[in-house]
Image 1 (cartoon, helix red, strand yellow):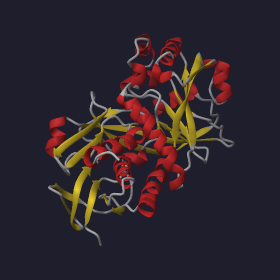
Image 2 (cartoon, rainbow, N blue to C red; image 1 turned 90 degrees about the horizontal axis):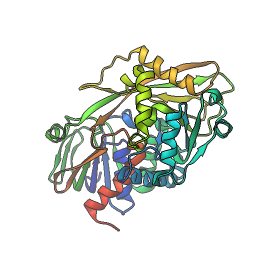
Image 3 (cartoon, rainbow, N blue to C red; image 1 turned 90 degrees about the vertical axis):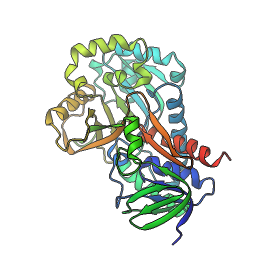
Length: 377
């Protein structure tokens, strides 16, 4: 068994796999180590939603565009279906429509389109027409089924790209070109550590200095009664416009925030906004809430789920529907940074997405970090 590599990646979530892909494309010998037998973390607990529109202007938005393009390249090769393309942001209030109009007028809205009520319901017939002021259509988004996409991506990296992946392997020390693990020692010219929200296993002092915290999310799978309405695109609503920085930073968002403070204080207090995406079986992955906690609580209040479902029902007319699964996601968080690229040693990088945007930005991040460590070309 080969034990010496050009690059060793600790963590086989989407961020770790993105670094492995970028390095493998350079022809490097790549090792990925993960402590779990299979993917169970943030990368498979989310929407599988590659979000471009609404991302923070500048670097994050550009990374999301590049990551979307890499998903388009890699998904068919790895046998990963693109379940949905595009996004409809449904505006239920005039103030929300004003935010969308301001966004459309800027650089990030150039390829998007404002929709009338009739146009929005023609695109997504399940939208509640009576509650709509209008909508924004974005062509940029992609949606994959994250539970299967992450294992398929890992399998393709092994089979087609020559990446070595060892699971059920605990890494208890990394640095100076060596990794000490439960599988023995490995050596690597460069090391990238992608721990997600695990803050104590490696470089805990760096996590402490950076102040990285954790966020817990409520997530659900909702199954409409047959025949399930078809969502031609992912759906968001007003609450997202005061949460996603690409919208929330616009001056027009201030009036919407004031109105939502009056009308939706209970949802805002739980960090709730709406994302609804659909899979091949007709089921909708729906969320989410945001709870900032030192240690994510294992206890999930039903009242929070009810608030999320109330927003879903206000936006989409699904008829009879039932919740068939509930789970909690977590991710690392910093209020003022979308990601961290830290250098504990010259040949080591600690890479943490601190904004819940791993699926949307990881491929671009991986390319940047690998170019930094090994040079371009």
